[in-house]
Image (cartoon, rainbow, N blue to C red):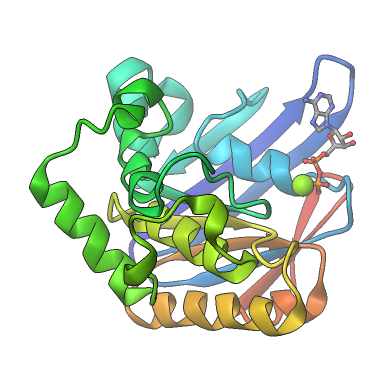
Length: 228
Ligand code: ADP
Ligand code: MG
């Protein structure tokens, strides 16, 4: 299978001297569901942010869909970011906006936020958003404010937002961290379904019972990555 994501000897030094990633190399192929498990402070979020260049790395190369992430700027960077759908522990929804507007927001490559706020989307975009919400069992909430949703529904709305660009890679950072075990299980089941449908997923967690839902588990300890 084709390589979607590749870390070649990636290191990250924060300006305060913390060495958060130490010579990390690993590869994710198309169709995989990989979890990265490690304790708090081990570098999981740093690893995730390096993928879409929310932070610059200090050494090595991150390859996303065959392109070196650190070489991209401006429009090219935005296009590269659209290849990655992000799901966060705390959903990162805009609660004053409708569920559908939040989903459509995913198109922006997390930039140019005002355009989304003013609802400058085509009918085709909206229909695509509605179709995704339907798939996630949220169609009846499309025009509700995101604040009206329960925790599990919020995370499903966030999943819809992550999928709106038809990403090459779905990244989930502790996606069940804020949910009770039953609702968390529903989100994991949905991620597994997405994976069966061909989506490539990298999930970060500190919880082994969550990590075990992935097909492959790698460990990160103090900035070093280990394949099991
Ligand atoms: P995890 O997500 O596994 O909890 P992080 O990637 O958030 O770990 O953090 C890894 C290490 O880098 C920790 O020691 C943390 O304190 C440090 N760190 C994270 N973000 C920053 C930052 N912006 N500036 C300085 N140090 C940071
Ligand atoms: Mg973290």
